[in-house]
Image 1 (cartoon, rainbow, N blue to C red):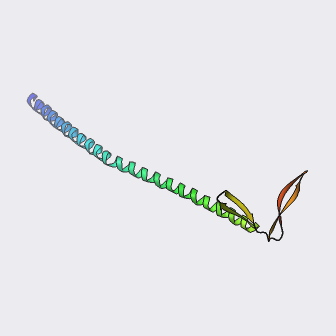
Image 2 (cartoon, rainbow, N blue to C red; image 1 turned 180 degrees about the vertical axis):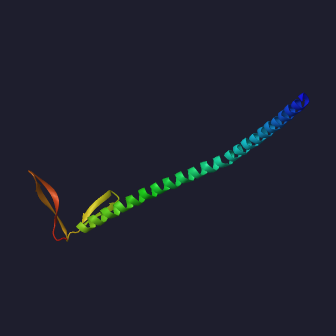
Image 3 (cartoon, helix red, strand yellow; image 1 turned 90 degrees about the horizontal axis):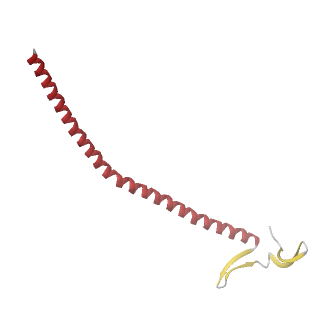
Length: 123
């Protein structure tokens, strides 16, 4: 009976030790696989993050330039409707007007006189 009990205990210990060894090896392999995956995925994620950030920055930059262009065009169109035009010269920007639509005169602004443009004919 004692021999049988000792044999059973020895078999259980051997089985447990073998399982523990096998699980340790499997855990080590799993950790190695996870570390390998991390080393492969980390540069990919950093690259994709950098690409996404670059796309966002390029979109904002393009939107900013586009908005500036549209604002300039809207201002020019608005001035053109009033008979005014901005011209670039060697001395800088100058404002010119259509003499058929606008006339330079002097206006009263409160108690002071100031130069102004009078609409001769318009919308």
